Length: 370
Image: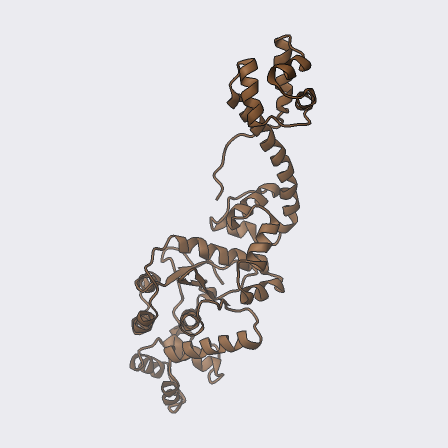
């Protein structure tokens, strides 16, 4: 968030005004001053009339003649230039008012992502600060045209909720900065999958800190970012330099959905490399959809293999105690089995829901995502 509190004056006069007053006090006309400084009379006249700037070279000459330090004139000119720049920048801010309506500002403020305010111009300034840009052009160039890869641009350019999605993704980057990791190790990520699955099966109250700590140990950053209105995202995977980042929302607070999403994102890291950017719950086509299908298959197999699924289905109809039995046998969570059966439309969506354990990232607060 912006922390600048410096006062900026409403009006600043050109330094030529000050020069004119000092010459008057010294009973010195423009022509005499020009001769004494060795500058053309027209140059001095232009300065006095606010048409030209006082350069550093002039400031030294003025110091010699008027005995006023050169830094006084340099600072006077700098303050005037900054004043003009701020007037010009005000137009940029005013142009950003309509742009700011693309973001769920009130909800972002409630999460502490931006400063709460009802002032339109303040919202624009705070959003510029949030995205670390100085204009709407900078925002579009960075998030759509230059910095981010093709997959991400395609996802957002034609998405009516692009602002909310970009804000959610940006928060993940901010959170990731607070996590210190070593070099990413792909082989070690593969090795810790059984440990991650064990955490999933037991799902202790501090499950998220456990998976985050385990992933940090092998160079993978994992963050939870509460979802925003109009940004119905379960998760995202991308690389920040040489470090992979998994960002999860916990949308719907269903643990079967959360764990499927988590291992889906791990699948992207292992299968698709640094160039692929995944945003879950966004429509894909062509090659991108093929990548999503591969990640889906990877996640499904981690949670419950095809052979395990076949064994379970051979024993239909299932009772809730059967589901718990197979969850223990295959070291998964009952919610995973229920979710799989519901997805295959083999059981009604209401059946076995009491075996699903809500996802709660803060045991003292309800997750604000639904």
